Image (tube, rainbow, N blue to C red; front, side, top):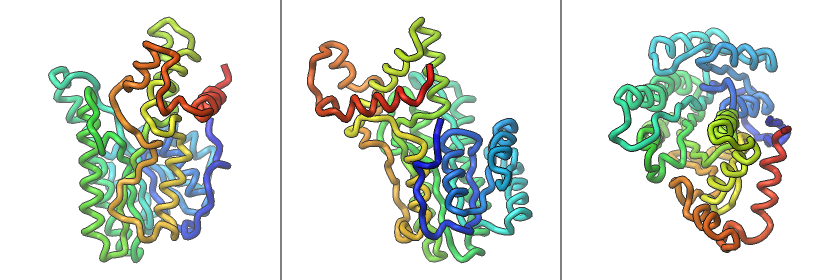
Length: 308
């Protein structure tokens, strides 16, 4: 689905010891591949053994650990593996996260809320807590936590996810202040709607549930999310990887405490956005995102990813 030819080459990455969590597929996998392409030594973790084994088969040089980062004991084991395989750490990208429950607050189950907090917030804490001493010992480095545009603006009917992402943004900004004297930079990446394996599975499920073709489900997905951006498109995993690599490279050596949006300038997380509702009511209506040819070109590239 993705090709690393769209990932750039960045100075200062070669030879670095890197941990990427939640790297079994999707964005995390693309970030890990980007570091490998740039000559880093990479260790990954995931909760799915089959994903780790498949990645290891593709890239025999990587180290792997089966880890649920919400469990501090398993995170201790992960860092034991890193110490044995790489004898230290320069960069960590915490990509692990779950979506959590969706719906009105009165329907949110306490267990679902707690699980999202355990993975998205506590997990990031467990990983960074163990990573910091290693990065200090290395003389400095970079920490990146995957947040979301949901961590920068309200997201109705997804308050659990938004709360966890606001939390990690606050964590990163505070750590940037705490760790700057040690030469450690801390930033969050805030993706917009990302094309991913998970979204592909979602589109197939919705097509089956609604009795429509998968292509029609893709079209609805694209128009719903694409029109919530000033630059109407869907974000690629490579876009996220390039930003992570840039901020961890020599070119990003003065960037810290930032929430770096890779989102086409998301205007709303209300689904569907008002623009899509307008077009549904009046297909001939003109809104800024539909002016010019970019939208149609972006849509064609989106559909072109698939082989029906």
